[in-house]
Image 1 (cartoon, one colour):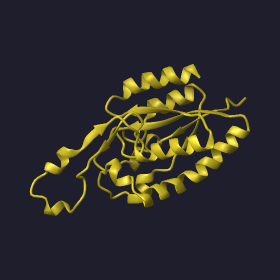
Image 2: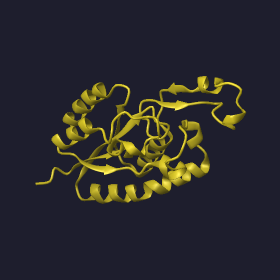
Image 3: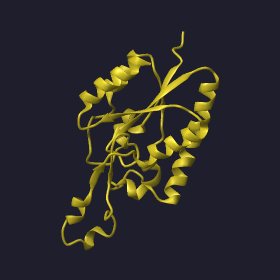
Image 4: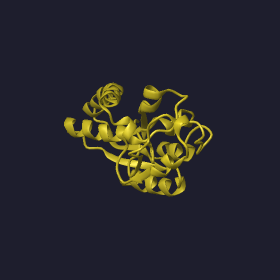
Length: 184
């Protein structure tokens, strides 16, 4: 018998290879988090990765501000259209989709916090120092993609809670995820 429980999951939790090069929290996937979803009988809808779509695999790290311009928002909405249709189909068929699971710190998929900078732009070779990097700050807000997803859900009248994985402290976020999944 089907559990009829599902979550939306940030792309890189199933495929760490999609992350910006140089940042390697795990070799392939967040195995313990995925095993927990399996143990608790949740199906998974993998969200498309907006950063690969907009910037490709050979990209530099970006901040939320670089993903918050009109064309990027439009492209991210286009990526979410098939997800919106899938959600509607599942919900209409009696499935429960109580959670979106994002990745804290991500400029696109952050949930509790993301990275921002007012100065993160320009030609890198023209910099005399790396002072620019000191302007990057972690702020308590959603990344650009999660913000858009939340707006989409609100407009559709879909109630979904946003949870997150903290790559700096995966075991703590695993405990919190376990607690939240079991309450549903």
